[in-house]
Image 1 (tube, protein in one colour):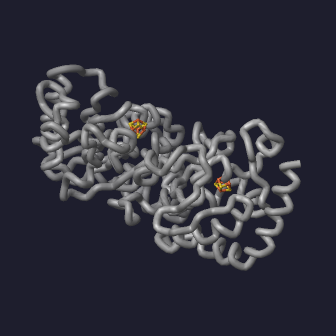
Image 2: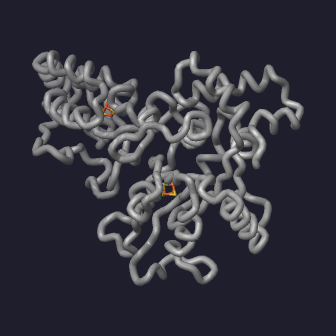
Amino acid sequence: MKETFYEYVQKRGISRKDFLKFCTAITAMMGLDASLTPKVVEALETKERIPVIYKHFQECTGCSESFIRTAHPVVADLILDMISLDYHDTLMAAAGHQAREAAHMTKEKYKGGYILACEGSIPLADGGIHSMVDGKTQLELFREYEKDCMAIIAYGSCAAFGNVQAAHPNPTQATPIYKLTNKPVINVPGCPPIAEVMAGVITHILTFGIPELDIRKRPKVFYRHRIHDNCQRRPFFDAGMFVESFDDEGAKLGWCLYKMGCKGPVTYNSCANMKWNEGTCWPVESGNPCLGCSEDNFWDFGPMFTTLAQVPGTNIIYNPDKVGAAVVGAAAAGVAVHAAATVVVEKMKKDKDTTTSVADQQNKGVSK
Ligand code: SF4
Ligand code: SF4
């Protein structure tokens, strides 16, 4: 039987006060109300540390890179203290047979009780020969650890949706994890996902169990926000003030990037509210349009820096000069699926005529 997290940190000489501070920080990190901190404390005092086996498949290791950039709590706390990361293809001191032995022992000892974290998709074409380790296909390796796990976390858009390898024409038949198993799968997409979200999902499983998921198996707690609704450039969108080229006056003034191909109106993720790099910035804030990397098939949406002309699931063709009005329809379609941001959409509907005319006026001003 594994020890609890609290027993573990006590042995390391960490004070009760520091333990409580840690619990407060991870409660906030999970997007939960501070009043739930006592429940987190109780869980970490009483529940055993969860064994985790982290496997890499067809991917670039960028997700693990993101994971080790976690700021709150620092990755050392998370990986070494809160969970028991018994095997990680790239982040462990042991190598070769020793490393494989550690994974095997965990699998045998905690049958039905460990988490399998996956990074990357599984190539199925030509019998799986496009990515093999130690003479085994990725599918064989996945099956070895999948059959006895409690649940699977699919980290990154490769594991969750296939991502770049699955882009048309998908020559290796890259397949997302959830299509290959009957075990519970929690998709944590993003290319890569936000470090704090990666950590937060594990924390949630440890403290409250598997989080509530949306239709794409993403934890609602982190993927319920539409980028567009939390974006600091949103007032410019509503006012119809758009960047027309990456070096124009609007770009310098931080105007909306919709015409530069921003997929924020149809993308759900926490980038705009949690941000990256210890909460200092995120792509749209830095001047790059959202690429929609946490959505299924984002590579096949069309050229990345081209204005979103058509939103999947609708027949709307946008006139960029009347974008304020057109996006209301797209937003409404996306929001109906996610049941989020209703208030914003209602406000946009009410403001539609005014927004359009302001957009027209501002666009005339920009093109002078
Ligand atoms: S999701 Fe992106 S960062 Fe993560 S492994 Fe795939 S390509 Fe790399
Ligand atoms: S279109 Fe993009 S840049 Fe503009 S407000 Fe929406 S998310 Fe922000």
